[in-house]
Amino acid sequence: MTPAGGVVGRLRAAGLTVATGESLTGGLVCAALVDVPGSSRVVRGGVVAYASDLKAGVLGVDAELLARGGAVQAEVARQLALGAARLLGADGGIGTTGVAGPGPDEGLPPGTVYVAASLGSTVRVRRLDLAGTRGLVRRATTAAALALLAGLLADREQNPGGHS
Image: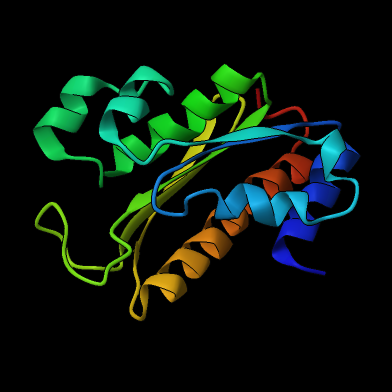
């Protein structure tokens, strides 16, 4: 089973939904999810907010945060995940931001990535330092984001009453 298939299966079993707020992945996370048969029951949708003004205006990322530190920050990924879930009416969210390459951006080397996953009010963020081509960085980011949500879902299965 693919990582996306595992996430979709867990979401279906729990009766939960997900939305994505993506920057560097440009919709790859949502595309991976909707490749799975039956995903229409759990995927609410996705927003590709490549430009910082869209991150703020559409997904509610703090504009001052973006102005101070740029788009490639852990807190931005967290706010993308929460913003996508809120905007699209989902139980959970996935957020991705980073530098896909081939060159540096915002003073950060290519492969500097943050992914976030939320389920209710629980949010996990992970920094990745990836190497490889632009395509490889984007695909590895997609896999890491799905794995982060899979971890939240697994924790929820182990402790059903412990998450909001």
